[in-house]
Image 1 (tube, helix red, strand yellow):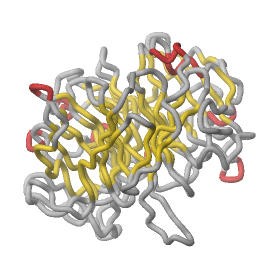
Image 2 (cartoon, helix red, strand yellow):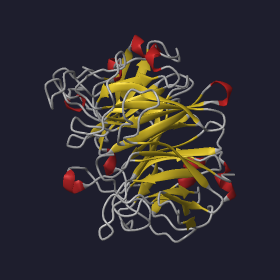
Image 3 (cartoon, rainbow, N blue to C red):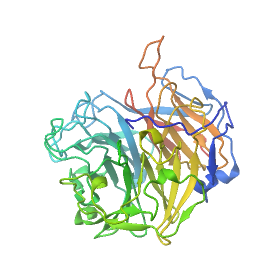
Image 4 (spheres, rainbow, N blue to C red):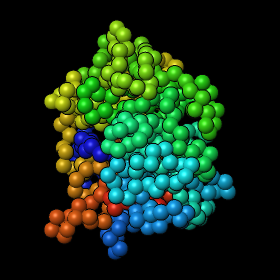
Length: 452
């Protein structure tokens, strides 16, 4: 999230705006209620409290704010909340696990807690909120500490959270005492079950997001490398697939994707193009002890790179992953304002589903959509990550855009206002509540209303 994303959406009004793309947008929502073609929830109503504008009939609760005391007494609530998961608990409870994308210089880092801290010099990590069946906060505590730049991640089929370090600094860099660039498993109900143990077999690189195949246990991972050579798309074959909490510590094999004849995915610009012979090449040194993985020798044919590999999620029998943009001026083979790719493991087939831009209007309806989630009523919820006014938007399968929320917390001045981006949008397991973070000032909201 530290890097600005290109704009995906084309134009907007209060309702029913257009979106600039080519390809099968409905692909992303197969089997959801989005087929009804709904047009949103109405215009946003200004919030008298100046926190969050919502449509008529919706309301919010502030669950947590940076700087306030954690209910556990472990210290203040950390800043920069980012990716998040809402995991089911017993008796209707929800465990909300929240990343904090803090660097070594961040003032409100995750407090170090004995048994939950990986590197005392690092300021990132996760906190966990426990909500009862009525949505009331019953607990808030550190879930893992001493990690670096925790951006995104992904849930597991056994209801834990895999938090990813978007950082690959080595021990001795920026004051760190340990190597970074790992994935950590977090149990929101009992963080001490998972502790602060890096899942080193999943690789050391600038992780962005992960998705787990619920049938095989294979873990797919995206790498958001900022410089050439750009990131890779990985899969991890665990020795103990679907073994539950802690099973990923048993190791496995990390592999990188090779699309024969395609060294850079940005060179592909025609939606619907399929590659039927995707190959997976073992990573020579997953821990990148001497050389970053994307620079390692994968033999004749190499591996396939892509700029800004970010979102990754499982749907149906496929894994979808996103390249947020590509710019030839920065070293990519082509230019686009976003690609969505679909990989079908059973067929070893990769398909380009959607291409955004580059003719997309970068001014409206906002800059740089980022985090996404599937909405219970169908379609997607999209968080903005850019300058100017910041929104959560809904997208229907027909490409219609509608506003869901607007951040009203001005961190600038009346003359030069600034609003923090949204992050970590997610729905409760029963689909009745939307949870979302505002990155700055760090605030976590629960939004209820007539979602259906």
